[in-house]
Length: 194
Image 1 (cartoon, rainbow, N blue to C red):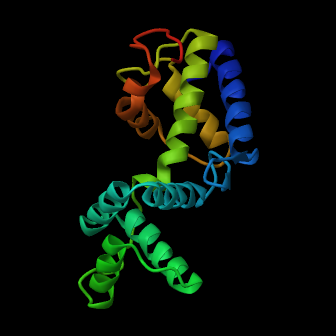
Image 2: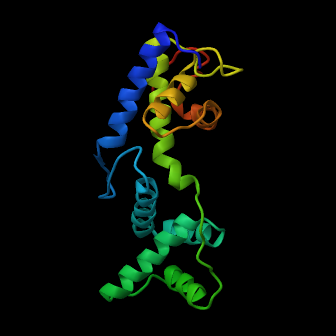
């Protein structure tokens, strides 16, 4: 994006916000301290969430096992940790978890690799917050059809490049497109968080 005086101020503002999100840790209900833009913290956070939810109700555990069987590697990793923790502490495995363990030991469930949405969960929230703050403070539209006109997605993209976390305009606009319904307003122009 070609920067003007106004967009330069917006990029500086977005850079400051994203820098704070990268360095300041938050304490989650899962007992995991994370930074919104941490390297592997997003996956760890989602794993801990799955483990906590799976222990609340049998239906939650059944859902996690079904998702792991369906190929969601984060659910598989969380369940494997639960199995290890329960066996190590001498607790009996819940029936559904014991059945999943039998499938693992029997070779029916391979260890899955690769990045998934959970690896980017917190990063996407941080990007969305930065976009919304830029929209509201600088009255910029969220995106530009060609990516050349000043818009919040371009500002946030430039800010991420300033921090050495380069994400192109199209990648940031795609995060916005996938998640804008969670922003609480139509955001064709301005809006507020719900």
